[in-house]
Image 1 (cartoon, one colour):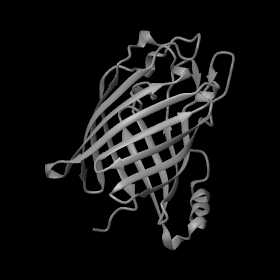
Image 2: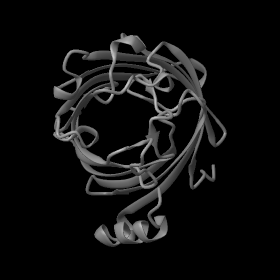
Image 3: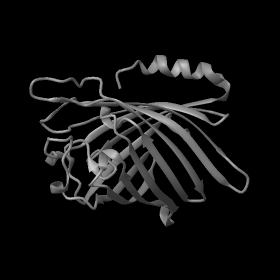
Length: 244
């Protein structure tokens, strides 16, 4: 993320007033940047960080950044996401969440030998009840291609004994940009808080093989994206740390 985090945080605080705001930052080290079942870090470790704002009204916004590696055909080493949304709960304990995200790649550009990673927006809407959540994503300009893309995901998180938690996830990628190779992704993750840190272990993958894809049109699907099943490790901490 190349924007001034301090300036953004100050501006967000001004929306609702500091007395009703909560600002936090999360830093995560992960063995592989997994996005909907494929690797966006060439199967290498990634360092990720966010700055998040939440208001009492249910409005929230934030910045998120990670190192990336799309392979030798693409230029760019940084992903920067800017997002905002609104969340709440209806009677009966049914939760809802709507928002928009802008995926950007500030150090990416076209050259004689590499493709630029194009920025694009995506919107979402979610509904949840208890531990289960359904979330629908949509963009009309996936990766700057002017093609639409949709992603439907169902997830659930359960508390386990000894302060462990279990997260289950399944997603379906489809739309014009995936015409002919729509695919499912899945994950099973276990995590545990240890002091101010959360340790995670995740098994994830897709129903794709690398030979299924051509991304973008005319360019072989990079081996670095790795849609095959694999195990990921992560360590995360959120600031400010609890004083308890």
